[in-house]
Length: 395
Image (cartoon, rainbow, N blue to C red):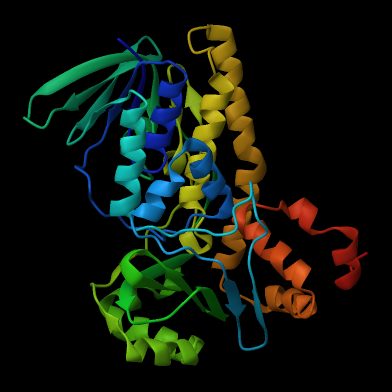
């Protein structure tokens, strides 16, 4: 009998398992893959996520794994360009964008170091119920045999297609249609910082990652997906050529070192977060278009929120129910704000954003505070202070 079973050992599951174990609970962490293994990702960890990694004692491990520190950000359209960076958080003045085959094993190792029992290559097949309460999981071991383990709480950190959500009947409470599709690859010999480019119908992200490689990512409207996927490379290159010509010249002098990766299946939803004996974290509870690269950071935030609310009250029915409600309420605050922000950007209609950013040109403090709203170092409410409203003629 475990206190907690966590399904999924990537950027939501491993921190959740680690934090529960640090609270003294006996935790089983099940992962269907065997690390290191890559996965689709925009890689970027915003300042808010960096602060949590630092608090957890894992940030130096990313540095030692060859992550390039990012200290500059820019946004450019045909009408405006701004340069700056997020305000510091907990004294940190840089961010990372690690490859997932680097990040996820570091997170899993952190869980194991905290006392978590990690089992890789284990595919969860079903939940175990007593009445309407989840009391365990049934899964296949690496050897192909079936095993069952029980726990006070089962955590679904198993992604957008969460088995836990499906088996527990977690319905979508907020849902929007798919908005974009995206394709990306990794390039050598392309000097870069964290760069964003936009024109109507196109969005480009440029992110330095491990081993002196640069992630070059482009977004298209969802209604172009069928055409794009039939001719991915021409669409991909033309997007850079027409949206960011100077960047395209840098790409032409560099070399693409991996295949093109991508997806048109970026769902947008919040699910019911918990029920008797179960709770969801990460993409299992909330998924949105990756265009603002908030997924990893919010997985960390949710892990901290869930474990912090539960604390030492896991085995008190009344206290546990109240803690899970508080966790779900957290999702309706900052997470919902970032969800709405991602949908706004994913419309690929920059005009309103461009008009606002034009008014920030020459006001570096406001530019950095704007980037801070994306990083989580500054809330939207704090960003729109009296000085800014006057600048925007909105007071």
